[in-house]
Length: 488
Ligand code: GDP
Ligand code: GDP
Image (cartoon, rainbow, N blue to C red; front, side, top):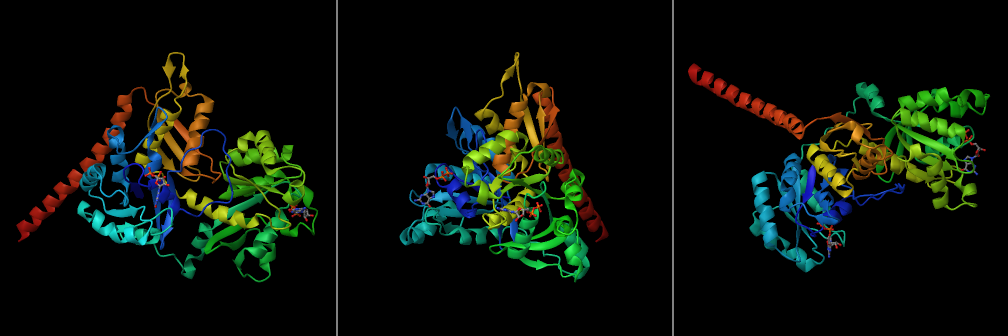
């Protein structure tokens, strides 16, 4: 984990966005409050890490954004910093060192974490040249001028950051590992009712975005699962299209009965990592579509919805109106991004691969506990839960338990005090902050804690256990040393 920190207004969020400059083409129109993105998976020279923007973490207090280094929430920042491997400390070249920066410096020294300075707002060569001299007195010498407005300096900054990260794991390439490799492939199920355009899409993906298909002669045609490397820009997604045989053979056999029995789609949905759910833009949201949607939700699969045949439908309806219609008819699919495409003329088809790459990256995100609790506090402060009778729903503490789909445990006072729409609000906020546009369902497990002390006790117990382990380790080391001395 790499955290971007610094006092307010130095450009933390700007730097975060600049580093993640690859914007997505599939837009997720989520109802209700949206928030800044806080955490994103990142890669630099093969080093994979989570980038955290503490600028986005600023707690909202009475509609005013209170920044991290405000005394109130210092404790929480400490937690975020303690979880990070490296810190990017953003400073403003145009203002130099301020008293607040000195305060931050002291804070960082205590943390003992490696710090790389982004001397930001270095918008011209003159300022760039002065950056080192300006900030060296702070005691950290890894100083790199950046300018977010001129998009300059991020790669040198990241070069410095990854020096503090563990070496990236070598990709396993030996042939024996072939099976394992196959397992690691991203499994994609393309589902939808007959004639929606699934075969056309598969052919387009295989024809245009393919760089390699497993070359088993002859058999490939009939294979149920087709391994395929899809590329977007310089990135390659090793994927397997699940159950494409039905689509390929369908011209020769009587398909309607066999291929469209829901059970077949169901099996494909169960086996996959992500569902591409195709609907017909000229006739969306039929009963059959709603049934398929239900299966996807029940199986808790990541999903992207593609409304095909937009070349026709787009002539009679505006995109916004169309999407609104689909959202209203299938509210249970609201977490899945919706994109209009045309498999026939290729409209927006390239964006699909880009999106799949994005989802795959999101699936690896484990939100650090410190960040998550800060986020929870902020989410509750922005929009407090309603009172039920004399009581109010409270959440003491939360933690991420796993991903794919992302699962979180919240320790709460009483489950029944949480209205369904409030739970939905928390889910939406989590999705926006940590898994934007990935179409991932977020699973929340509410566990009751009668008293705050109870939750505290859990935390203390965990910390105590960790300390106990360290102590044991220390005494073990002393014991071994004593033994060595004895032998001498
Ligand atoms: P944060 O509070 O630290 O997250 O700061 P923001 O990212 O919100 O940025 C604060 C202000 O600084 C915004 O108005 C940005 O447009 C501006 N800013 C950010 N980076 C640069 C930069 O490199 N050069 C200049 N001139 N302005 C910048
Ligand atoms: P499947 O049954 O879901 O595999 O659907 P097909 O790919 O076989 O497509 C059914 C029909 O829809 C074929 O006649 C395609 O040519 C047509 N079709 C597929 N995609 C599009 C599209 O984007 N626009 C239009 N106008 N027709 C399409």
